[in-house]
Image (tube, rainbow, N blue to C red; front, side):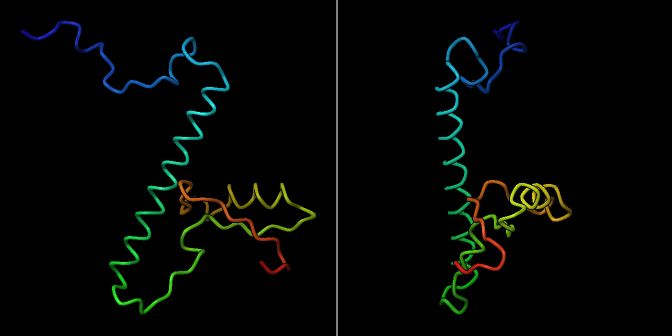
Length: 108
């Protein structure tokens, strides 16, 4: 016999949705762990795609393929970062990747 209240049951349980269970610091820890897990999964996915696309290593792996790269000027750090995040190329960005910040005119 089917449960008549089944339509009200949320099958995706998340502790973050219940503000009375976790305090703010614990929620922050959960979100950081989730973010780290997603970044690792995305990194692994890109790495495996690259390995299968180049099985004999014809093309070397470039670090820019495995990070979200921003080039900013030191004098306009916030402005350049916001422009990079909201600009026309933002639609193609993968926000599950680690962030790599490069300062304009500097090596490294």
